[in-house]
Amino acid sequence: MASLSTTSLTFKAPTTRASQVLRKASSIQSISFGRFQSSKSLRLQICCAAKAETVQKVSDIVKEQLALSADTALTAESKFSALGADSLDTVEIVMALEEKFNISVEEADAQNITTIQEAADLIEDLVQKKPAAEAA
Amino acid sequence: MAAPFTLRKIGVPPNSANLTEARRRVFDFFRASCRSIPTIMDIYNLQDVVAPSQLRFAISAQIRNNAHITDPKVIDLLLFKGMEELTDIVDHAKQRHHIIGQYVVGEGLVQNTGSKDQGKSDFLKNFYTSNYF
Image 1 (cartoon, rainbow over the protein chains, first blue to last red):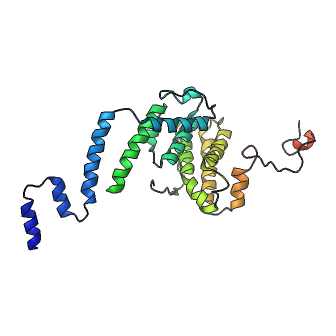
Image 2 (cartoon, each protein chain N blue to C red; image 1 turned 90 degrees about the horizontal axis):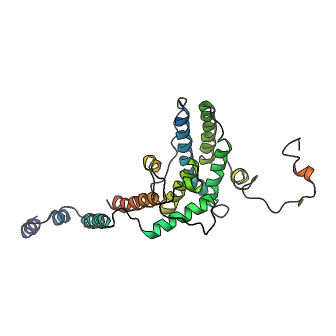
Image 3 (cartoon, each protein chain N blue to C red; image 1 turned 135 degrees about the vertical axis):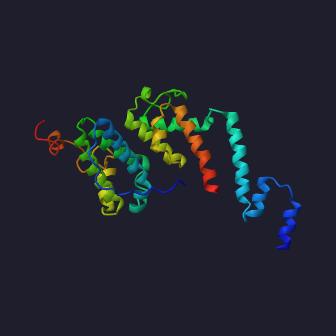
């Protein structure tokens, strides 16, 4: 008890992060808090562009699902309906993406997906949120 | 790993008012069944037999089979039967050979190439499908 008071006195003006370290037993909490902040600022820099490899993976899944030939040019802006997908195909593509990236897409989000770019953005978003939720 | 999906058994909901709501229910059913696929593969040990994408294709093929229907009540009934089938499968009330026979190997999904007669007779090939050919 005495030792605790001395440690609190030495860190007289702590940042909220350091005081969290003292109060909570695990320091993992604060580290994840810091990491979340840095990843959020990193996302602000990249803004609306998802990673190219994510877009590539999404394109592969779309090609497989719609049985397109391997050399069909798929840009990030191609709409699913333009590629010959009906609404059931779109839902199936979303389910295949869920399985591939191990995420869970809500129904409201799934309604808005019409192009490959939007799908990749949503996936990035969910993959970002998932480790933060698991660490908490 | 995303939170494991559990099939919640709700009672029979009231009839859908219009085609839009029926459509939404079809997609919800499809999503529920796709999310149950890992459980199904686990229960019936289908890991070496079939890939999840093939099962998804089988389910969507069955839905597409009835895609021409426009009456919401008929759609509701088909969904009810589909939901019943899915619940039976997830409850392990079926057996492995049922799943394989109905959804993996079948007419047009994965053709059984080791067939007995390679096909001399068109008459016999069409014999099971219909009387009139």
